[in-house]
Length: 131
Image (cartoon, rainbow, N blue to C red; front, side, top):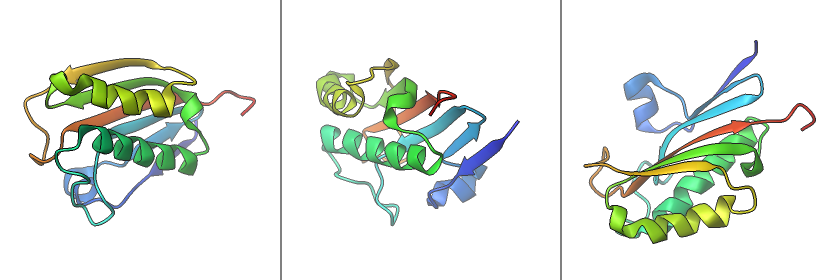
């Protein structure tokens, strides 16, 4: 069994003790990904669509680091603070994953770690043996 870990260097990785993603052989598990900039500030406060796009950009970069692509994503979980904005979150999901739609869930939650964050996304991927 081969295990690889990817880190983005956010303050929470060290404070909480986790990594952005773990690849175990062909399976990749991307942890909850919030809409943050490299300096740790929240990207686009108040803009649900832009925050979802930023989450998917981070996920995409992490997958690439571990030798995968968005087409390998088989499941996503979107944790949102306002389910009424589902279409904004869903638009970004479709733009990034619509060509190879995964199983997904969108769950409304009370809050995220920063009140300006509107969405956090998890993703699971499986890389085919021929990829």
